Length: 118
Figure 1 (cartoon, rainbow, N blue to C red):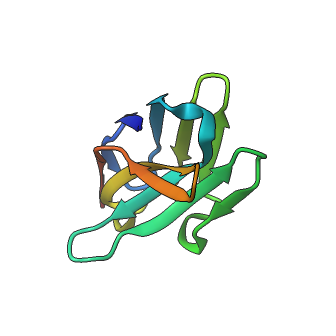
Figure 2 (cartoon, rainbow, N blue to C red):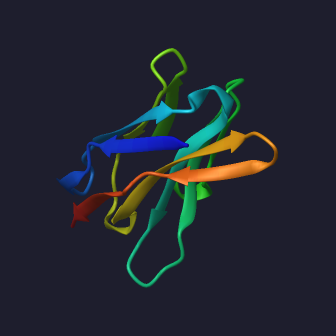
């Protein structure tokens, strides 16, 4: 089992910045991928950014150049620096971790609200 605890959401004006953090605990040794999804009201959950343990990073096209994901393997944390925020970035952001052990199991954090006002 892996537990993920997020922090850092909130309300910000368009053009502002927020930083999300996620700390993993439990059976962390088999975590391969960590990252963030988001879900806006009435929409499907979508991948925002991911980073594998070897360092390869993937971003959604909508956030490229504005968001930066980083990972500290020693501290078992993943962060998302969000700059130049837009109202369309408003969503609940979920940290996730893919654990590779006899298959792949995805674990989720509880979610943190990000609201960008225009």
